[in-house]
Image (cartoon, rainbow, N blue to C red; front, side, top):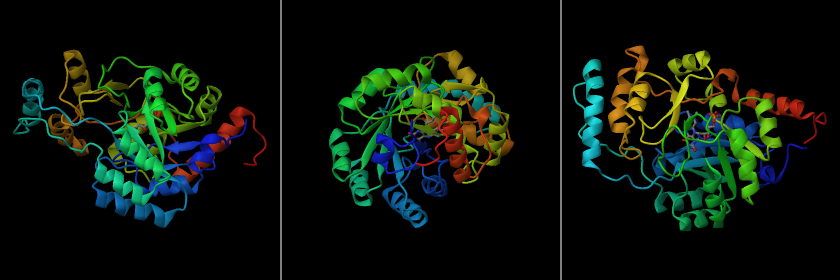
Length: 360
Ligand SMILES: Cc1cc2nc3c(=O)[nH]c(=O)nc-3n(C[C@H](O)[C@H](O)[C@H](O)COP(=O)(O)O)c2cc1C
């Protein structure tokens, strides 16, 4: 088994290792380092205007000729729901009082736009090697416009049914995202937090169900995990949490400290921050909201209620309400520059697979 395959040829990369495009935490410097090391660099662009996307692409291109991926959330327009806003307000009000925050917001407000024709047209001009989506796909005419421009389109699936829908829609790559994964889960619906499929069960079933190459994501942190994913039928892997400890990531001191202390069992999947399930370090807020077994305002409007609580904890001023995203394998993280991490991952994968021939 060689490390080059249909996926590496399609994405024009040396190794089947993809750095997850983590909005807020991935930086152009991280994407550059990964691309120069032979993997696929990535940048989460959901919170960026077209101008910001253009500036960031220019920065990436100034640092690398390698392939990179720009990522967007494909959520539907959030619905206004005054009743749900009011019940959410009542539920979080005691926390606001405790932390001394004056006002609970009246209603949820969207903090990022849904994907648009404006962004599609900008991407057609910019022509990154890859555009990936999370939470399903936008309008299929937008997907076709990207593909006609020679851009490979990927999206995440958390079940076989979602993977089949992506395959039928004609994506170039399906990312099978296991329940272990850190950050937002790509489920098409904002479904319950306590259901999900683990990566070892998901990857072979997705590989059997779809025609396009499959990438495995979730709980992979070293060459053992990568080798296992390849054996299970994936052609590549996407790692998020593992790259959070790289100096190029936009991870602050408290975040890095949390990663150093991370354990296999200290995260939960929770919709209580954004309105969609995300794997985050467990804390008082996550537990209280899980006990309430309630629905939250649509993604991303729930942030309006949760962000002031998280901000009140910034810099260690208070605790229990922080939003610290990472996956179940964070304890395996290594604090290495991204290029060194990619090189290590490649060596470890070869060793795990018994590949002694170091030629590509
Ligand atoms: C901090 C963080 C932020 C993330 N942000 C995004 C994002 O903006 N877009 C996206 O498609 N996936 C995002 N993800 C999910 C990753 O794409 C990937 O599925 C996940 O990191 C894999 O699991 P791992 O963290 O255990 O490696 C994020 C993950 C983390 C840890």
